[in-house]
Image 1 (cartoon, one colour):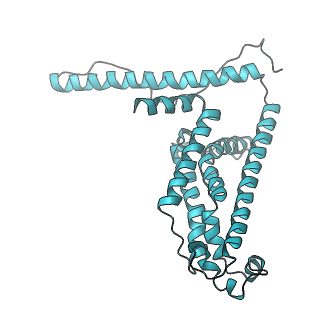
Image 2 (spheres, one colour):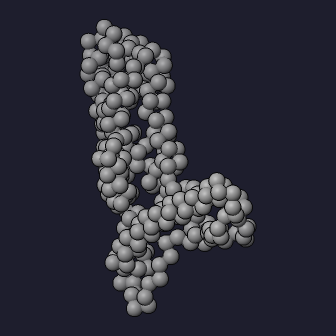
Image 3 (cartoon, rainbow, N blue to C red):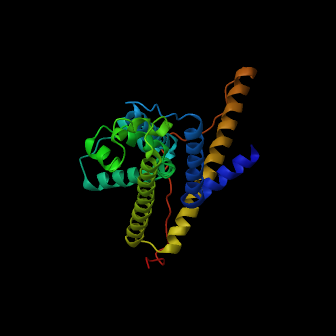
Length: 273
């Protein structure tokens, strides 16, 4: 347990590198276990629905879980209904969309990893592809094969078909699945690189200032958690002492307004470079 906490602590401090890699690795391992233990292609008319559900629904669950586990999500929505309404401003909308994109980028690591690894594995796509009720796709897969290929295509993943070329058809489907998987990985990496380049190019501060901001934000978050825990413990001890000793509680101050996070005042000497 201590080693797991240490790993999670490292992932928290290095969120953009090791943290994302750890999430992707755990998702890939979970997909391998899931496909080996749970998934069983029905080899019937349910092939397409069954394979598609196992390919996409876990990714959707992981995406929703990513939003739930993100602290930024609840920082953005907590008390939103009771905030003072302001006239519509383009700047406020842009800030909201920027924060939502940051949350979505973090939340999409696990679902994209699931889909990519599932496509590289090819089991879900193979099941779904053989159950696709489309004459065009069936003609493409069974071109030059035995006459009963199209009618028995849904039975290929289970090896119950008498068509001698079934392994060739399944190899073609796995190749398509792996090509789609690599295309998805390449597209995500290219989009991430382009977005990072655009964000850095539009940064009003230098690289050193940005690194300092990130370190400051992490230290501020750690200190806030520690001070909040200490203050909560002192307040609980005061209330319990007052209750058991039957005397008025001592005067104390508790923060009631929202805390303005990540407020950093740079010196005027540091200009964007």
